[in-house]
Length: 436
Ligand SMILES: NC(=O)c1ccc[n+]([C@@H]2O[C@H](COP(=O)([O-])OP(=O)(O)OC[C@H]3O[C@@H](n4cnc5c(N)ncnc54)[C@H](O)[C@@H]3O)[C@@H](O)[C@H]2O)c1
Ligand SMILES: O=c1ccn([C@@H]2O[C@H](COP(=O)(O)OP(=O)(O)O[C@H]3O[C@H](CO)[C@@H](O)[C@H](O)[C@H]3O)[C@@H](O)[C@H]2O)c(=O)[nH]1
Image (cartoon, rainbow, N blue to C red; front, top):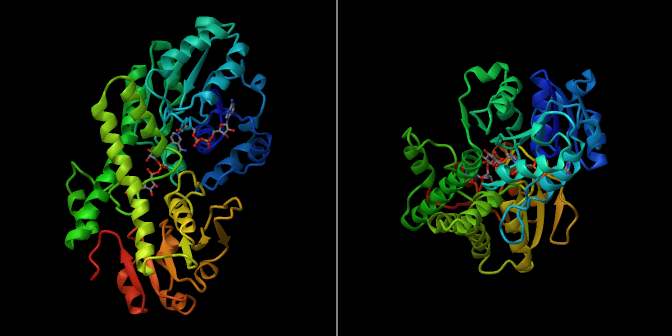
C-alpha cells in the first residue's frame, strides 16, 4: 500500500520505518526541512536503538522517502497516518494545534476517497470532531474517512514495539476503514497480535487509560518506597515479591526518581483535564495524587543530596550521571534528572552532567561533559539519576580517586551497594535499608 506518515518525531520516524519494513511504500512529511534532509540521508533525527539500520535500508531502496510538501502525499497515499505532537497547553489540556495544522494543510488537497488514521495521543472526543472538520474542508467530502489507531511504543524500545506490538487498537466508525486497516496491518506479526476493534471514544480512552495506569503503578511503588524508608523495608524486594503475582506483574514497579518524558506526564494531565470537563472528579483526584507523589520523588532526591552535604549545597560540586528521561533514548523532555539538576543549581550547587546520548542545549544551570570521569572529578557528591546500563559497570575504586567526597545517591536503585561500599563509598538509595 501507499502510506504517508505526517510528523517525523519519535513516533512518526519509527512508524514510517516500520511501515516500510512491513513492505509498504512510505512517504514521511515534516514541516522542518533540516529533519527531512537528514531522514532522506537515512539517518534518524534522534537516538533510538535499531532505527538507523531500518532507515538506511529503506531510504536506499527507495521504499521510504521524506518531504515537506503535502502535495507529494495528498492523492498519492491510500492511508495518511497523523503522528504530530500533542503537547501540554498551559491549561493542562492537550494542545491540538499541530493536528489542526495537518487538517488545514492536507484536507483541502484531498480529491479522492482516502483514509486518515490518527496515531497522535488525543483527548476523548477528538476523532469525532476531527472527522467532521476534515470532511468539511476536503473536496472529496464524505469519501474521506478517519480512524484512531493509538500507539503504545516505548522510547528506547520503539523499533521492537513497532515491529512486534502487544496489541493493535483500532477506533473505527465504518467497515471500509476496517478493511483498509486490515491491509495496512496484514503483516507477519499481526496474526497472533490481539486486536481491539472499537469506537472512537473507547480507542481514545484506551490510550489515555494505559498511560494513567502505568503512571499509577510507578507512583504506588514510590509511595511504598517512602514507607519502606521509614520502617527499614526494602522496596526492591517488595516489588519483586508482589510482581511475582501474575495479576500485578513486575513491570513499571521500579521505584526511584519517578516518571518523566514527552508522554506520560502530559498525557495524564490531559486525562485529568478531560475527567474534570466531564465531571468525573474521582479520576482527576486520583491523577493529581499520582502527579503529587511523582513530583515529590524529584524533590526528595534533591533534599537527600542537600542533607548528605550537611544541609547546604551552596558552592558544592555535584556530578549528575544521566540526563535523558530514561535509558535508551536521548529524549530529555520532562526529564526527572534535569529537574533535580535544576533544583540543586537553584540552591547554589555547581552541576556537572554526563549522559551517554543526550546532547543538552548550553544552559547556565550546568555544564555537560563527555565522560563519567570528567563529571565526577572533584565532586562533593555523585547522583545516579538515569539508569543507563553502562553506569552499572562503573569501577567504584577508580572513581574514588577522582572525587572530593565518596558519596553517591543511587536514585534509580540499580547500583550494587556492596561493590561501592567495598571501595569506600557511602551509597544511598531511596527506599532501601541502609545496611544493604
Ligand atoms: N514519543 C513516543 O514514544 C510516543 C509514543 C506513543 C504516542 N506518542 C504520541 O505521538 C505524538 C507524537 O509524539 P512525538 O514524541 O513523536 O512528538 P515530536 O514532537 O517528537 O514529533 C512531532 C513532529 O511533528 C512535526 N510537525 C508538527 N506540525 C506538523 C505539521 N503540520 N505537518 C507535518 N509535521 C508536523 C514536528 O516538526 C515534529 O517533527 C504525540 O501525540 C505523542 O503523545 C508518542
Ligand atoms: O518501573 C518503572 C518504569 C518506568 N519508570 C519511568 O517512567 C517513565 C516512562 O517510562 P516508559 O513507560 O518506559 O517510557 P515511555 O517511552 O515514556 O513510554 C510510555 O509512554 C508512551 C507514550 O504515550 C507509551 O506509548 C508507552 O506505552 C508508555 O510506556 C520514565 O521516566 C522511566 O524512568 C519508572 O520510574 N519506573
